[in-house]
Length: 286
Image 1 (cartoon, rainbow, N blue to C red):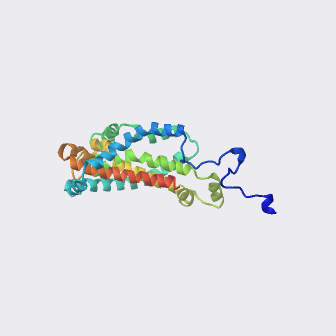
Image 2: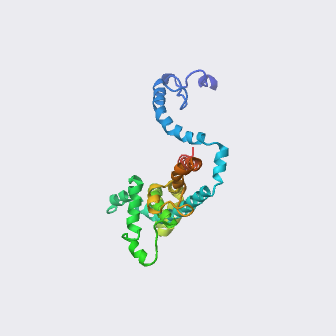
Image 3: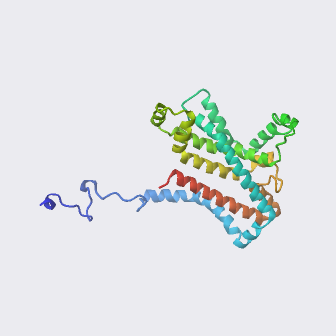
């Protein structure tokens, strides 16, 4: 009797006759207009993909492995990894307080602070290199005082790290600021009512809840530091085994050994690709 009063719907018929056919799954049987948009997007996608794929096709695995054994290549990898890891540590330690400041409700000169933080991402890297050089060079704004103390920064590994921090830090600061700003105010107020101070709020509330944004920003900053070239070559020079990073070795490789340039390009493209996948996985885990 119950089945007669409430018959089960048939899978061969729409669940809602008034609405027509049941909705199709996303991506299944694209409409003609959707197909048109996909075709329109294809040229730009190929424009991005083909040059990167060409790098991998240009060098054979045996040549890549043989070139990887060269001392100059190994030194460039060592300098890049060492400097970028130190830069990342500096960025996280110094950038986290700045990110927290930016994430707070409006304060005086907030727009100016925001603009200063974002400026290195839009400046030509060569301008950043010149700015660092006239600031920390021997006759620079601060460098002349450091020189009196016997401290010389330009054309050293420290200069490589400073250039990387200057260019890559905004990626972490901006991502971390978004993460801090997303923390619910009700949680903060509840913790304050329980007697939590600023340090405890940062340790037990902000950092855990903004963890995804912090990690994704750190990965992006590290990847950007690893690929930094323009500011580094002007401020730190291109000295093999001392300041020559992978991007600078690639630049030199076009004049000396194309296989070296291709080998290091494959490494950097692979690292960047994996880093972006990690960030996207963190942001969109589904």
